[in-house]
Length: 243
Length: 386
Image 1: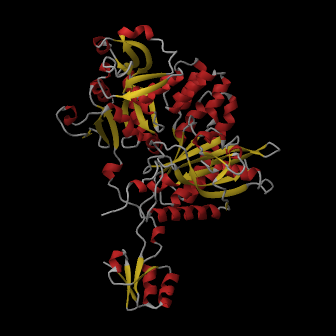
Image 2: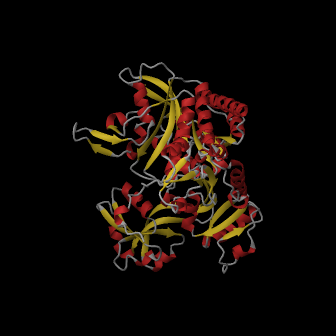
Image 3: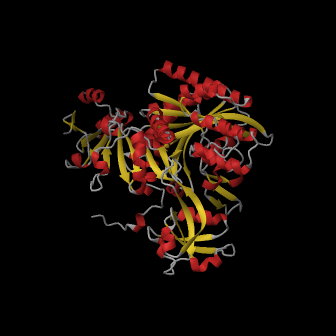
């Protein structure tokens, strides 16, 4: 019968044949470098230059609404995102390389991020601070529970866990310094660089949880599948720090 | 409008319904893999979903997974049971007990779902299917190569491209730390530093272990350059046999891939990869592909302890994770489906089905498009639709 002929033409077991999907060469083969906006970016710019990365002019234009920028390298684009989000973009493979603070890396503790290089920029520390007026209670070893305002609930909880104290973290995204005086919490955990914000709000730094600097990070899967290109960029950054 | 109660269909975090065509694609992929393993003489086993905690988490492959295993109490025996969070441990148990007297090497394969207490960033599902095979009781180069080769060709059979086989020696860093008598605290620090590939975090160590570990860190990358670096390194003599074995594996593997005409496989070496390889001894590996955002599978050599005798047997094998594999596999073309009007005889429909067609026996002409048929039978002839 005639349909037997058609059978030969249209293989009914089509699912067995996995056709190669065509992805546009442009996007799938480009490396994405994620960098943080703001303070760190200013410190990072000279380093990028030393690595031979020159972003398009829009990149330094504060008013530009663009989020993704081309560079002088055809296969490298830069995205400019919030400092905390760099680690997330790299962890999920949205970007292959990035520059992220040790604070964000430790807070999220992503399994698939390597952070091979200390870029020696963005120095600060993650510290515990409390109101000057309560300093006599600084020793909290008698407590089983403490309430803390922070942007870093995981790091904070882990730090106090090791002291045998349960930390109840209230997540704030800024202006933690005001929280103790308004009776929200007794302590805060936040990044400190000069300490002037703390002093202005009558807070004293009591313990340092983590010394922070920015690190070059890479996605594990990307490094394994594209070791030459990523290895080359890591090496360029390594040389740039040395010089 | 959907009128179902949205709350009643909410699934717990890490669980999903697989719908058409995904469920079928996964099932077919599993069939391809199992056929592939069977073709190499691997026989399928099917361990139970639940077993007693003490056997499931016994020393060896099982022990490392304790924190990921759901536990429940057996109301009958009043003993604690665990829901498997990995199949390798179960295969090890079977090989060392019920199949203890089977001739070695023993080749076993499996494809089963597992359950984990936590999802992770990279593995967002708490339930997923593990497909793999184990080669038990043969500690030689040929076995290592057989397993690597099977893993790679299994991924090729599923249509994956740009595959990376990343080889590692999980014991290497532990041996170096033991050799230099590092304290427990220092070992924890070194493990954390190596896990994140942070060279500078090793600076606090004494010069000798520091230089060894840093040299290992810098020997990560494409196999030929990494092996060169490892060969030139001033490593303790005790570690040489493992490294020589790794080098031999690489050479033999490249030759085999060459003979098979498989060219788009990249072999890399990462001598400090250790996380998740806690029970491995000897060469181990992880599998990646450019289109996949996480590891596709992993494998390697480990020891199993045999029942009462306490004898150790060397085994090697690998596991593929169907959840990440599904995301990396090329999309499958919808299957050809033939619309046959209800006026056709049952005998005709049977003949068509016997020929391999998926036949939808329609009651009305509108079914033809509504049910996404690709072909129709008109006056005894098959025509493509559209």
